[in-house]
Length: 301
Image (cartoon, rainbow, N blue to C red; front, side):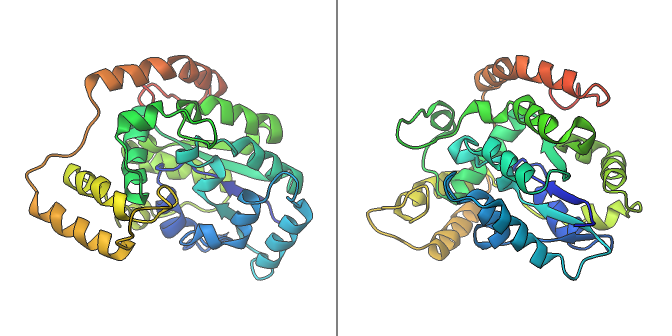
């Protein structure tokens, strides 16, 4: 391949959908190679994620990607999927494996990683998991420790571990870290860093950020969704007593949540906030050492 290939790997809940929908797929200088709307059925992302260590083929991966680049010779080629940083419900157990697969097939690729304050990230991930079928509380999510299947792990959000892995594989100069909070507070700086890394012209950030992509779920939504998830067939609940079907669950959730607007938004308890801060204290110190040119005090405090 003559073009530089960029892998935007997430994390989840760091404005990945915003970048996929309003930037990578619309910018005249970039070509988004994968189907971000249906990542589970996209052949490119699926071949990075699904095969076992025994059956993964870097040659097949390269072949799939080459087929997608035929009509995009003049553009920056981007693969963008938050699943490449691991899956929250399984604790990101395979994110090192995915990193090695990317390196084996495209050793000269460049990587974009989004991070977010862990307190905010955990709350947002919990809301998303409930939306996807999770039935437990946020406390149970943080303490699950199964023997037979992977589960959520706080280690997943020790960003320095995955960042060091990509630094070792591709070199620090070929990895861009984008704090989610920088997008919220300094969008012009955020997109300047991104376009410089991609080596493309500056963009009109108002066109990108004006449209709301994902709306946060309020507390009433979470309450009814958690209850209805017991009668909904999902990957997180594959064998319910009976299946009320997702379309019916969605309708019921919307109706009930609108009837209970007086219920305030869900938030972390002070004890849980303190517990999370203490757990990630050392990891965030290591992250600051890895990113000396990026002031993280406003993002990871």
